[in-house]
Length: 345
Picture 1 (cartoon, one colour):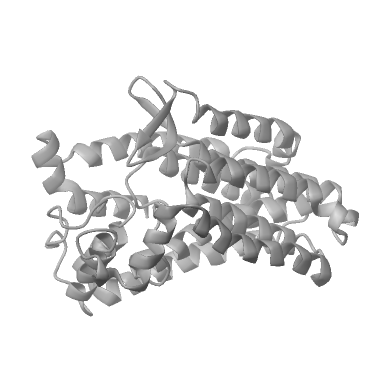
Picture 2 (cartoon, one colour):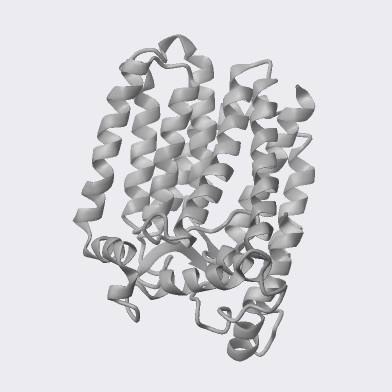
């Protein structure tokens, strides 16, 4: 999947790389650094006694909170396109929200495995809610609605998998559902995106532009695509063609059946992740592997819904495919941990 991602990044970014940086392989070379580091993480972490991660539940949360807070420190936080989502030291940049997702998985898995008798009550799940809401507040302040939604959905899914009863789950779910429209109404730019989602052709050169270009790419691809490397939307018509909207280029070049094949492979990864979880002999391993699988699955689904215009546009990378080293390395590392759980059980 990572190799396929590099191929699609080259296809989607070669023109922009040549025009803007004088190198067709500019984005691919950056991605290959992440591939190398991620591969080391996969092969190293597969031998990890994953039970030891349970001892890191508090340090993981503390590190994640510190990194998320550093985003707002002048001179450390890096702002792009009106959002401050990265921390930077020289040429090195890091997106803390990518780390926060897995820190939350480790904390939740460790807490519920140790306090499994408390999961039936609202008070019993309160620590997980507190950490999840804290992460969501720090991430939405960047602002980053997409990752906030991912963490929120991850939190709900992990609480459900912990074995809580339906009454407690409903008490948690209702405020979450109410919070989504409230967060949209609080920020004018989110209302603009919602308006662009409802009728993108009302503002074809403004807020609706990106979605329209994405739909053009998918429509142009038809059933069988225009052929690898033959996308026209990558010629600076479609913004973020190599990152958040790389699936649009995939759809244009490979067509409906190409995307269907991609979803089958993604679905197989998700199936294997949950199968590993179901075979675990301990609660921590079950929740840890389930959480890792959920992070991957949630991002794939949300990215697909965004590029197809099914939900309002929001920036979210396609895991293992989109250009971006933080997401790639952390996702590959998580797959190494997932393999460690598989080997042990």
